Image 1 (cartoon, rainbow, N blue to C red):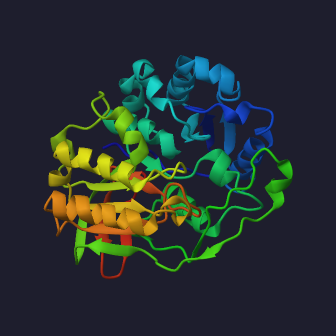
Image 2: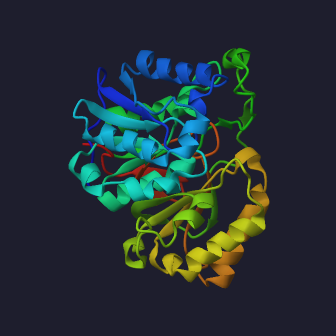
Length: 345
């Protein structure tokens, strides 16, 4: 896997709308501008907004090729050192016909986002480029009142400092509170935070396990399984599968069916362990745990396959960054994830 160069203050990054075009809708533009300003002022980056990114929901819904064009042009532009997804959505899969994987491979640079951006991460994996499952512009950089310290810490450690042995530990607090994004007054209101009562939880397994990270939002897997970007069974060998559920808060039966599909593909037979994100709002918190235990331990007969649960990534706040394609070590005794190699060059 190719590691992109780390970010430095003064670098130019590009912002792209690869699924939803809501950032360009007038009721949400203020939140986009807040996120953009944070990237410039808090992180010292120069920001380019790609030509189609703010053309609005109606236009981008009708023109997936325009969204893909922005991504390809951002990779081709030698001035641009990183690319961040503005927000997720539900139809990034429509970009697949317009992607040139050689362009990505030959112009390695940081790419980050989550949720429906899972599709783009599998594009990066197909091209052989390490990418970063982490903050998006509207949601994290545009966080109400101020960004979470936990989120900022991992942005700095993973993307800018690129240290070896970065330790990911449980946040002491979390929130899934939603304040109406269309109300500009909410930009200044702190969301209510909950005290973390569980920390990272070990569902099964013991000791340590390691492997390269590969995964994303499980809601999205069903859209890309069987496509050219979905890894073959042997590509999952010794990988650590990380997955999370979206703000749609899928019912436990839905998660059960999606996990069964991964078992049927033989993926669960290949991996070294599983990392599961904190469920949005902690809805179905206990129910999801039972689903994992049933499908993995009882149905797939993998009762010793390690599973670490309730990790701060994906559709929760604050969040860490998981570098896809990087090797990590998971210690179930200390309940820590260690990125054992520098996630950037």
